[in-house]
Every structure is written in C-alpha cells, then in structure tokens.
Amino acid sequence: MSGSVIELGDAEFAREVLESKEPVLVDFTATWCPPCRVLGPVIESVAKDYEGRLKVAKLNVDDHQATPQQFGIRAMPTLLFFKDGKVAGQIVGAVPRTRIEQTLREIL
Image (spheres, rainbow, N blue to C red):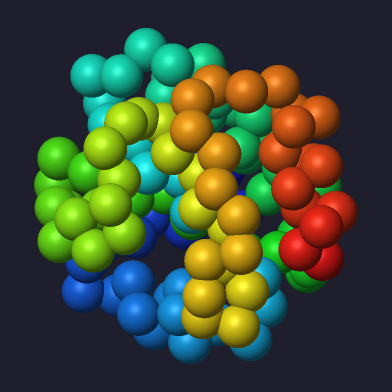
C-alpha cells in the first residue's frame, strides 16, 4: 500500500475523517473482495495525484465493523467522500478513475 493511503480502524475514524480539515475519501474494502483488489491501485493513484488536497483512507470492513454499520455500508467496495465531517458523495462498486474524479471535482 502507498504511503499516501491511510489504513483506518473504528478507533481513529472520527479523528482522521470526521474531524479532518481537508476532504477525505474512504475506501471501505475487504481482503476477500475481487472488485476491491481491482480498485486498490486506482485508489492509490488518486491518493498520490491529489496529495495535499485530499486525504485518502482504507477501512477493512471485516476487521472494523462499527464504522461500516454506522454509515450503512452493505456492498464492497464502497467509496465515501467526506467534506466538513459529512458524507458528500458515495460510489458503490469498482468504477473507472474518471468516475471517482467526477465526484472529486464536485467536492473539491
């Protein structure tokens, strides 16, 4: 995993995401999920290209179940975009980078 992507757990979610001064993209993922593995390199690339303007994090839903429950995550991968501590966008499934950047343009 790239140094640009933060690995999150339930314990640090509020501090790293909800209290963040910059927008945050959270990838809710699971190791057993093939589409998640396809999307992984795209997320790392976005993290690198948007460094300084966007915080990018991954949360393993098997290891940390409270946060996915809190946000109603039912399918993997799910991308949630946070701005000012609130969900500002959502994408479900493995999508092309252009779709992720379209949502980022609306948020940034």
